[in-house]
Length: 638
Picture 1: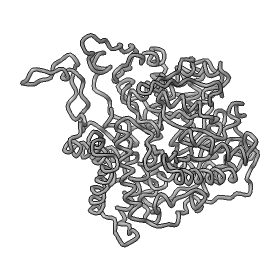
Picture 2: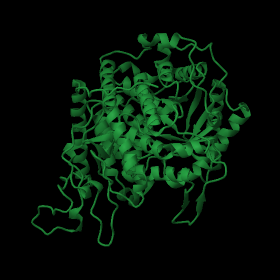
Picture 3: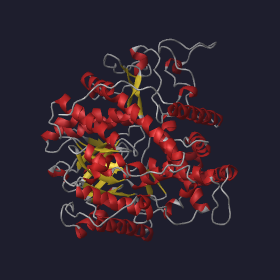
Picture 4: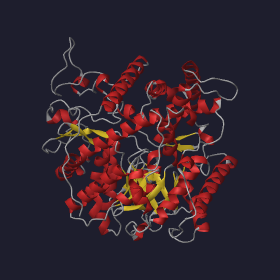
């Protein structure tokens, strides 16, 4: 059993203060522009108590007693620094949300020492926000928050070294782990031995049922990139998971009256919590917001682990955005702590780690080693990996990528990373999972639909040939397409015994940029896709169909990261256009007129486009690269 020691919280580093100042400036600017555009960004001062009327010369209206959102000046971008201590806690009613309307009573928040719920409570929220579950979350926070903050500070320090000219490399201090041929991960559970097709998607009720019934071997319920982390989305997603394991999940569409029920052979369920860099503002422990990763993991594990084990499966998780093996070690310590607290044998939890950051590609062996008692495999998270490549090398003029559509699997740094992942996993007894096919069915155009499905088939055939044990799809209609490929080319449950010892991937292979062109259409497509995704995300949608692809947060990250880099180095596009801030402003205005025509003037006016445009503009033109757009965007939905 691993020994745990309570670590003291480290002092903030100077790099963290710098990131915080840059973030505050970006959010202030966004809030100001969004307000000018007519966006309701909640930039008013919060009420001290819900019962107290606002100080105003006019009589208070019905909305006056509702707690207001914090001012824009207090909305911080948290890249590598924790938030400052919160103000003293307010009354219980103020902490749980708005005062109920006459004739209605909202549930009251459970009382747990040092813990405050700041989100409005819905009718069933108390089923997951139980006193016991909240105490478990508080224990997780107190045990691991200091380590999380230290690791985020280390990220910022490493990024500063990249910005100063350093390039990623394999770490000499862990060479002994890479060179030891004898260690392997723990045996894979029986129900995870066949993962040939996995479907991913957000955690709304209809999606969960459809995904579990899709015919895929595995469904990844996503609290991360495919989920807009509004308080209702997060809590109702947890309720849906709890209902799945208590046998109560069902759904009747309010418009069509169609009823959805779980089938006889549902897919194995894996949950993806948020990454270490995100927080859950609606739950504070000792005045600090809890880590989004610990919040999502903690509730899913606490409520469902024993029911999952009783059903012959287990508590399985996908872990996103890891950059180092130290971050993997933290997850391992969380798993050991959680299993001990619930009286579950160590090693029951199984995780699959997404290799979707450039630094993690150089530490695959070490990540497997740190999680060897709890790991099931690694996944090639291609879209976030492209974003991370741009972000980590954003200050390097020699690493500017061509159009996103020209950065394809099987070539340059993506080909090297994909090959290394298979070799690493299979040599250690772990699964190698392929990347996402983002295509969705194209209605009323048979030829275009078949062309899209042909791309999916070709991509999945490449993955089987490369040695992958399974793959991802984003839409139920793609499950049979991918499954046909894997059943035909890989009739066995997996090919984990296929160890590709001949593969040799060097540092320069993982840093080789893709050949291609930078085009005006690619630049303008980045604008349209990025703004449209952010606008939908602000309205609570995390998986969004745009131009016949199912897009998630990684898409918008690639779009704005590429624009930031092209502007910074005044990239020349095919045709001679030089990308400058002035050109970007003109293109942004023109492309938003195009989007208005595409979605319709009425839908455009009813959406949150002013805020989305302001945010996209600010992070694209920011003097410093903003780590994650979801951090300033989160301030617009809390």
